[in-house]
Image (tube, rainbow, N blue to C red; front, side, top):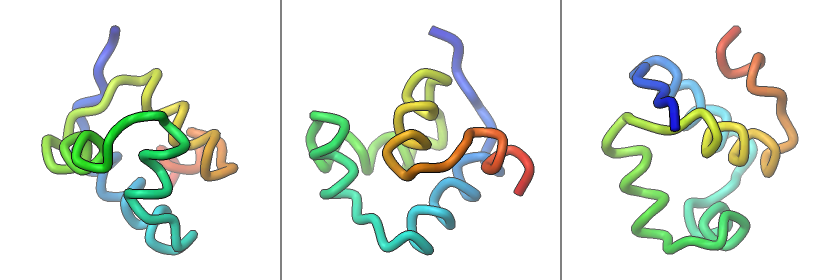
Length: 69
């Protein structure tokens, strides 16, 4: 699966998560993965395009909003 290797993209996604008041725990539940797994995604600053789409869908935003910010 193709990876999005942009620190800027991850930082923007974190900012949007925070502003939406979505916790890593809530996100993990929606992604059906552990909270530690979600934290690892954000700490590694390396996320697959598919996973980024899933997170954006959960947050109710279009991935282009993350790229544009």
